[in-house]
Amino acid sequence: MSDQLFKEQQQELPTLGQYYSRQEDEIDLKELFLALWKGKWIIVLSTFLVTVLAIAYALSATQKWTAQAIVTVPQVSDFSQYQKMVNGFQPAFDIYQEDGAVLVSESLASLVDSEKLFSLYIQQFQSKSNKLDYIATLEAFKQDKALISSELSDEELERAEQLLYSKWSDKLDSSSQKDNSSIYTLNGTWENAEGSFSFLAGYLDYIDVKAKNVAISNLASIVNGKFNGLTQEKRLLEDQAKSRLKIELEQSRYALQIAKAAKLNAPVENLGDKDIFSINMGANALEAKVKVLERLEQLEILEPKIQIINSKLKLLNQLAVDPSIVFQTSRFIERPEKPLSRTSPKRPLIAILGTFLGGLLGCFIVLVRFAFREK
View 1: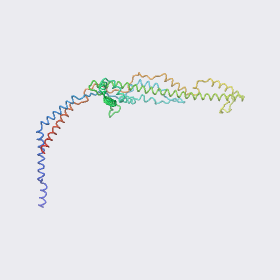
View 2: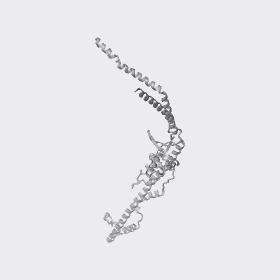
View 3: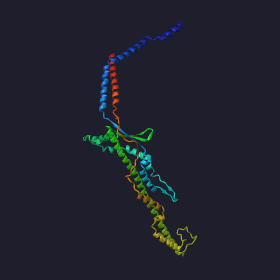
View 4: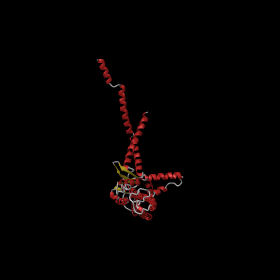
């Protein structure tokens, strides 16, 4: 029993090696703090130098100011004039059935859909071609482009211009809100507040015109396509009506000859009215029918659809796509304004990070020197 108690007490007591190990750890930690204290001027100097460099960078770095606008889907009142013009063409697209029923065509519906109009606006804003066309008109861009050396080879010159265009086009960007894809934030970045506002506002005016022109062009294309389609359909129906008239006239002439040969001048009931050459109406009536068919010019009598097509073509000729109407393909939630603060550089943050990194660098230098001295 006493032997077992003695062994347990021995296990609870720390060994001599463990004791000295803990003592060395405590000594090492004290030495580290002491080394840092002795090298405090190195740390201070390093912190000061890196902070100065950070502040110098923050003051000399190119400033970026970003103007913003927030847009969303237009309301009906924003494009009511455009909708009125589109609806004026609707009867030319509807389908008129023989029983008098009218099937409303959906061909023009997408043109006056507010979501589609807004999507068209965003597409025009994001179009790289539109960005480049707008940027090419700016004096600042022309000056940057003039700085490209003419001594470069054709391939190098083309590459340099592509990089310049890409750099400038990146100054215009857009993003949708995460919780609402029908709301977009449009950004324009410049080197000062006034410039960013003018840059974005000018591009928005440019895109507003582009989007409206595309909407008008889409309507004109659909209307012209419908006009051409109706013209071709009319020509086809007229050819069919002329062929039918020719056949009807020939049949009537042959029937007249047969009726005269049979000496049937008056109508006769139940005399093969379903034959190819029907003579049951008599020679007198057949002769009158032949005269009418020979003088017949109104093909609508034989093909009523021609009358409907003529009415649609007349409507399309009377109406015109007016490119001067005023309407909007988007609605501003927030119009562009001059930014109150720069986007970058964040000078206070850069100074704080410089101070922090300078302190870390100083500590690192002191600890490395201490490690080498210990070895």
